[in-house]
Image (cartoon, rainbow, N blue to C red; front, side):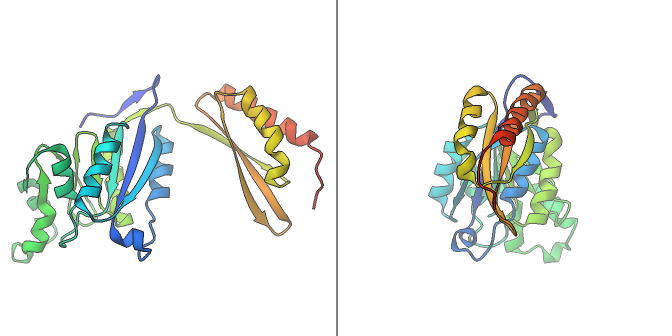
Length: 252
């Protein structure tokens, strides 16, 4: 792992691989995707793709190999606990073609929280780390994640994942932060779609999106303008405001 680097002339990208049968069954509602997306955006990393896969070795390996060759970083959540279906570490090792062993550093981390006699076979599974990986500290429950190549493996429990993300963030390369401005339109999305498309065509280097919502007075739309260039953002946002000022639609 290297120290944090600002990459001002390039875009730093990431993917998230969410691992777990419980997510796909609906038993557990994922609380990590939105948090990670917001966190990475704030430090200058674009979360570009999210995949959810079952606790299946072949599926994890296939997804991981596809993603790690496409993005600057791949973050994974889930599957590094003590039970038989926690197979993320083994799957990552196979994806990288390396062995996996009980890591003395990870054992030491676990012993910070429990007595040696409590470190049973199941708990020792959490100390199995692929060869060549660096540990990702876990200040919450001590069982570490790990970082190998461009893949950062974290826990699925939100509080632990968030602590791990804080640990790795200073070591991540980052690009220019994506700036955004939200403009509320007092009309339906269909009313603004045509004029908004014309503005998007005038400013192809700016990302413009529309997001409908409903409040006590009816359907409205949030128009979000995004750019890494503050000047271009300001110009495009002003064009959106001007368009809304002259838009002739029926009001509720």
